Length: 123
Image (cartoon, rainbow, N blue to C red):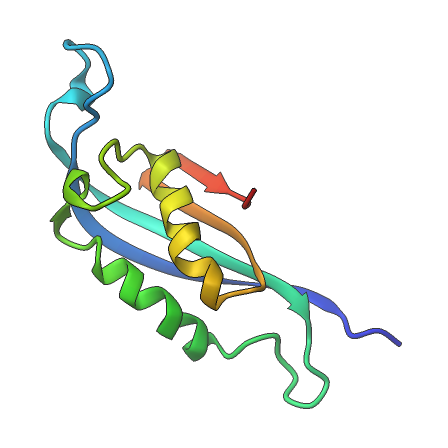
């Protein structure tokens, strides 16, 4: 019998400011503002029959935390690759940072408010 396939999700949070330089002059997001960002990193794969999990949640956290620290309490526009830090671009940027260490990565979600979020599934 094949090992069952599961998806694990690790949440993260960070506070950051940004502005969107490419929207119209009157758009509210062109002005600098901040968010209490929330996100998720999802990995998917077979359960290891010996240890009984896909990946240790602590190991997953160890890969995610250094990336989140680079965003927390910063102006996102000043981070290389995030000069236009839309939720979409933040999700793709995070994927690019995480993918080399997480071959099982299947999704990065960025939530900029309790009603607005973006998920990126690789590409």
